[in-house]
Length: 294
Image (cartoon, rainbow, N blue to C red; front, top):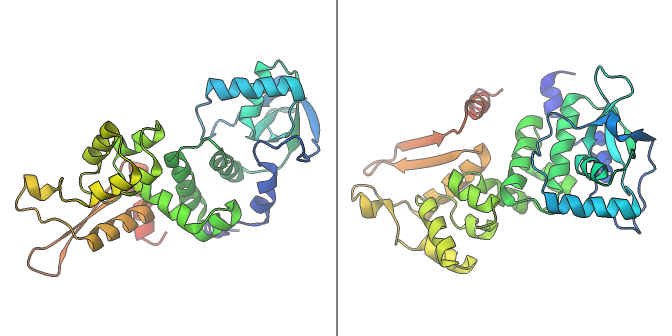
C-alpha cells in the first residue's frame, strides 16, 4: 500500500474498533476490558511523541486516590517497545500510568496491541480529543492534526467521534484567530462562544482584550463585533471596511487552511489580493503540498 493510499484510507476498521478501548473515565457499573497482562510499572514507558505535554497536578492526584481505592478500572493500551524486549510503550493511558506511580502501584493492567508509529500518533490524538477538560484550541488542533496528517474529513471525524460536523467546523475556524486570542481560550479567559464572534474581524485582538476587561456576555460580544466602533478605516481612511461576505469567506478559508487569510478587494475593479499568514515552515510546507495536489 502506498503512503498516499494509507493517508486517504479514512477512518478504517482499526481506529473504529479502538474507539471503545480509549473511552475515558468508565463508571463502576461500566464493564471494563479484560487485560492481557499485568506488567511492572517500570517496564511501561510513555510515548515520546505523545501530543499531550502537560498533566495538571490536581486531577492527577484525584485519579491516584481513586486508583488506591478501586485500582485501575480501564487497562492501558500499549505496544511492545521497539528494541527493548519485555518492555512496553504507552499508546493510550499515560495519565493512568502517572497516577498509578503516585498511588504506588507496582503492576498495571495493559492491553497489548500491534500498532505502527503512524497509528500510535493517531490514537494519541484521538485520546486527547476525548478528554473532558480539553480547551477549544487544543480540541481544534487535534481535529486539524487528524485531517492534515491522516487525510480524514470533517464528516468522518464527526461520525467516528460522535460530534456534529458543525461543532468540528466551528472549532477549526478558531485556529484562524490571532495567537493572543487563542491563548485567552487556552487559559480560560475567553470562551469558544466569545471567540467565534471574532473570527475574521480585523481587530480581533483588541476586541478580545476589551471583552475580557469588561466581562461581556457572548451576546454582547456578538453585538460589539458587528459594530463599526473598531475598524482599520478609522485609523487609515484609505483602508475600506470589509463587508460581511468577505469576512465570512476569510473565516471559511482560514478554517480550511488552518492559517489566517486576508482578502483585499481593489477599490475600483473586480480583482484583489489574498494574503496567507503561516506561523511555521512546517505550515508553509503543508500549504505548498496542498496547492501542488500532493
